[in-house]
Length: 345
Ligand SMILES: NC(=O)C1=CN([C@@H]2O[C@H](COP(=O)(O)OP(=O)(O)OC[C@H]3O[C@@H](n4cnc5c(N)ncnc54)[C@H](OP(=O)(O)O)[C@@H]3O)[C@@H](O)[C@H]2O)C=CC1
Ligand SMILES: CC(C)=CCC[C@@H](C)[C@H]1CC[C@H]2C3=C(CC[C@]12C)[C@@]1(C)CCC(=O)[C@@H](C)[C@@H]1CC3
Image (cartoon, rainbow, N blue to C red; front, side, top):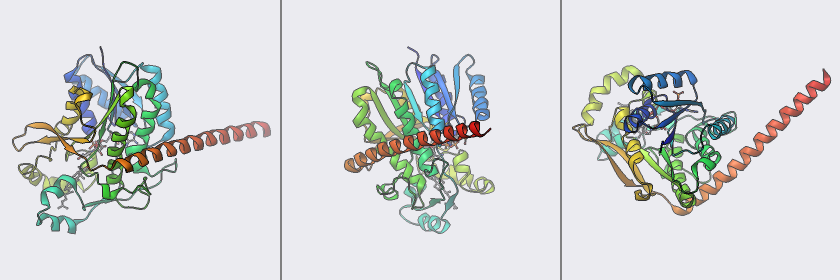
């Protein structure tokens, strides 16, 4: 049976590498690249077709950071497909990052150095902002847009007698201490990325608890440190050129420096081949690359609190209701305004 696979943020980096790998794995695949920029999506599709001529690659406009775009994209998916086998929740942003140089050099000469390179703990802060839906942009893009998409696609993901899979591209930068249950959007802190990734870890576990019975299984992945547009955006490009030889050197001592998008997509690809019942809902699946360049996947237990995860899940459902209410109010207001304009003309 052909598998239908949807990948968000598929036009570059880990998402695009995953698409290449999945097409090499399964020639019958029907792949849908869900991207916010259709020019970049077209270019990605063309690149995939160069190496996989005849592959079935569809495009879908989806800006996960916009509620309206998510709802329209979900309608389009429901019109196109009768089920979705794999939904890769991969799109993500880290806007306006700042590296704490002092903390970096302090960490470099401490016992924590390996962990610092693997997780960037204590090194990175970001400046976030509100989007046009009134949500924090990082939370909306990395987490809430994907949550809404899953909710909208439940008819395609929870089909009787069939299992479907969700795979989140999380991060080892996800940290419980960066997340506050009183401030789930991270309006007040300076680590929205870390908070949003921890939130995706919790959401994945909550979805397993609530949806496994309906045949929907969720997993989280850390791709390791991969050189992509996201990482290149952290420091000026000349700096990356300068430190690149060191990055390849560090790779000998830590398996988390996967560095290439192909390597980073290892765990995402590996999960595609696993039976969902064999997976651990409390594990994060890490893409790792040995010093000799061998790729492998390793599950590591996540630091999750069951009670907080449940509270978080109910807060997300409440936020979903609020967002839907606001949207229908907005639509009604603009209809009234249009009517008023028609009347006075
Ligand atoms: N690189 C790394 O070291 C790590 C990355 N990750 C995660 O991996 C995922 C992929 O990132 P990576 O490949 O590194 O970086 P890229 O920037 O190459 O890829 C991110 C993708 O997400 C898309 N995207 C961003 N915002 C939106 C949006 N609002 N709607 C739809 N698509 C959007 C981008 O589209 P566009 O091209 O239009 O911007 C792009 O296709 C992210 O979730 C990231 O957090 C996790 C750990 C480490
Ligand atoms: C200031 C100097 C001399 C070097 C800075 C190196 C950092 C820029 C680099 C060290 C660890 C890296 C890292 C990430 C970004 C770049 C570093 C902070 C990530 C945060 C990228 C995104 C992720 O999700 C993480 C898994 C990465 C963890 C390591």
